[in-house]
Length: 187
Image 1: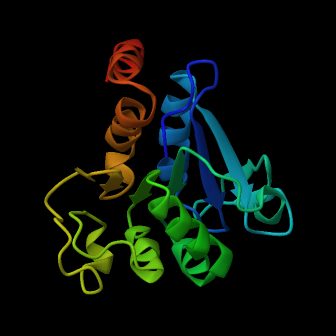
Image 2 (image 1 turned 45 degrees about the horizontal axis):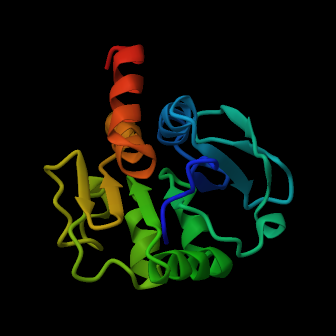
């Protein structure tokens, strides 16, 4: 997928399901929005209010079925117990495959690389993930905080969420914007 035109900010789609890991949503979304990206939170639930694993409730921008199969510049998958719902969601798996086939960015943190595995797009690609899914992702580079392989960005977990978000900014928006955001938040 070609980069967003200079007049349009990059569009990042994040599916949100109950039990999402709050840091893995809030940190990347915050730095992406600071960098000028348009981040759309799409609830897999029937309601826009989605409760995270630690009780934080976020209000999504729309429901997943309202998004349809529109293209985006980056599909961002958060981790936490919500990954089970992400893995079961056939339309999401189809979106992952379409995103990959179009050459768009795929990003997954914590246990979310298992969604990429379910969708069949992880084979032969370098990645990392949370140690809790090491048995399924035996090739994961668990010692790495963030791994980039082509247009795939993966990260280990909540403790790496800010680094993951800044890497997303560098790749999806621009290295200059990543530096500007890093400087502004003193990371």
